[in-house]
Amino acid sequence: MTAVAIPPAMPADRRQASPPSTRRRILAALAVAVALLPLAAADVAATALAALAIFAAALAAWLVLRLPDAPVALAAAFALVLVGAVSEKQLFAALGDPLIWLLIGAFVIGAVLTATGAAQALALRATEGIARFDRLAYRLTGVIAVTAFVIPSTTARATLLLPVFLALAAALRHARQVRALGLLFPTVILLSAAGSLLGAGAHLIAVDFMVRLGLPRIGFLHWLLLAAPFALLTSVGAAFAILHLFLTADERRAALPLPAPQRTPLSAAQRNALAIAGAVVLLWITAPLHGLDAALVSLAGALAATSTWLTGVSPKQALKQVEWSLVLFLAATLVIGTALVDSGAAQAIADGMLARLPAGVRDSDLLLLTAAALLALLAHLVVVSRSARALLLLPAVAVPVAALGGFNPAAIVLLCVIGSGFCQTFAVSAKPLAVFAGGSSPPFAAGDLLRLSAVLLLPVLALLVAFAWLVWPLLGLPLRG
Image (cartoon, rainbow, N blue to C red; front, side, top):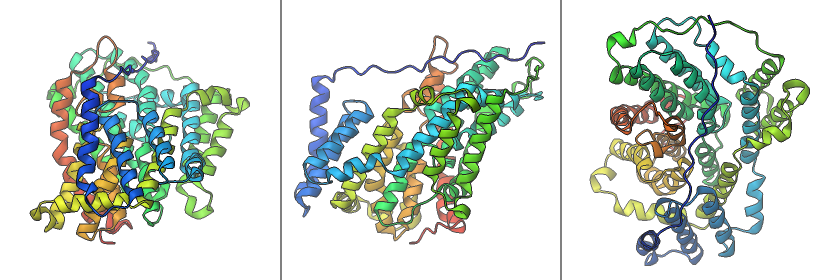
């Protein structure tokens, strides 16, 4: 019998930006005015007010005009230089930030894993010997989660894993099983991203924001200890929910019609790519022992991975696969974060939010923490970009909640940025959903996503609050600062 073959990946649908209508322009202007009106009368410095105006305009461009993330963020960064909120030196220094080079190096390593076919081959090997559909689902959950520690983008992970889904879906007999598998892949991609510092650009924004607030930087290992258990629990819980929401007991236990695999050994290039990726992750985890910066390790790994005599992939090939728009967006958001904190704009936002919180919420630490977590989980309904959600939630929710409850700001920042990764409600809420929903025959419908999101929301909320309240203090991140 022949092995399951990997069909070519379908390109992800990319929405073409259309010129904003007059109505949207008016709404954008009103959004900026509404955001600034409560602060205009407050005792806010001119530079802080200018930074707030630029930040509000960027939010309006993202939320109302639906303009692309990176150009808006870059325009906002340039404008912040013009008003004196940051210097030209700070603007260009953002491009040299270690977080940027950590991201670039990880992108290159991920590109090599994809180009050599190592990651896909390993994923398909993990499905060998599985006799039942439910066991396949749980095995895939683990495989998908592991990719978060090497591939620094949920979109890149979706593109990497789409051929694996297509190969498995082609071998399944029942459409309902294909639907469940189609929901499983993007859902676990999104939820498991929380477990790795490189799982999403929003995590790097959060780490930089902590540093701007004068807090210790969370490294790769500490993030892993804090967030990986949460990511694993939510991913497995989502797999359980999908299996029981969309399949009957017989369908869950049904024998798999997968053909017997013809195991072929990994090529030398694939073995080398996997060895390099494994060595890089090991060095990231053991950073407290050897003291090497994660960005330096990432670049060294990228250099080794693009040695053609090792992997057959040249630097030119790998660099073409880097999501440069995400890199530039992250650099620009670092500048925006610096301006918000240094100018006092973040404090002004926090003060304004504190004044508007209901008394019942302010008087209960648990309610306050739950409210912050719920806002983070629901933010995807308004802000599509995960990084933009983090940029909004950190000064507008994390800082005021930490101040009002006397919480450790680092714990609330982590709670908000992890919560912002919940974005399963609509296909437009996250690019991995769009990747798997693309094509002429999408495996799931919009109603399926809505149903799954409604079922997952409260358990994820309860688990997030429980981790912040009970688990993270045991792992070195106290709730009280």
